[in-house]
Length: 213
Image (cartoon, rainbow, N blue to C red; front, side):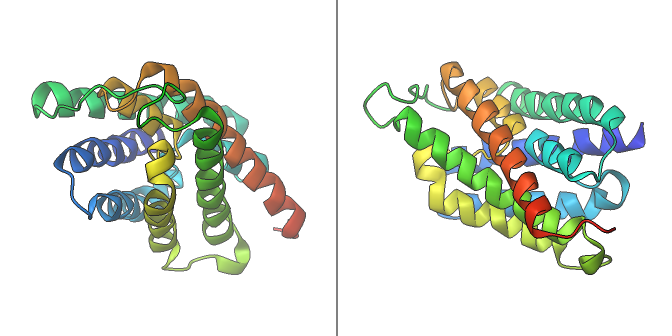
């Protein structure tokens, strides 16, 4: 049970940071989000692996570093943490966002293909880094994995965030939908593209890395 609680807590604070930091604006929101993920990974990685993202859990499952029995409880904990964080930010902390348009609806909304590709690529990069820094014997016991993973999110947020919003995480996609930061009609992009990116990263990892551990 402890690892599910850790996944809930880590995802909660990641999504809370996303909702509050983006509302506050400024040039440092991407750094704040990456830093939040980094510290939550260092805090809980030794207990749960520090996924805080259904796409990461899917990648770790495909890689063979997670049991199938844990997969669904991890997803439930992550989605619950993301949704509650958004509710706390909007209902308790008073954070508000202007209603956002659906992808492909015109105005400032990105096209659906562009948003889908941005989320897929950003999630691929994230899960690729997770698998290579946190699940291999050759990097076992390293002290940089949390920093590497957090800065991957920061880099992808700055690089791709203006296209899709830069969720790279279905739990974040749920959270920003609950918070009104994006249209609910966009939720499928965050779900499908992110899970596809995580799965593809795991497949490419298995192609490139000799799984003898």
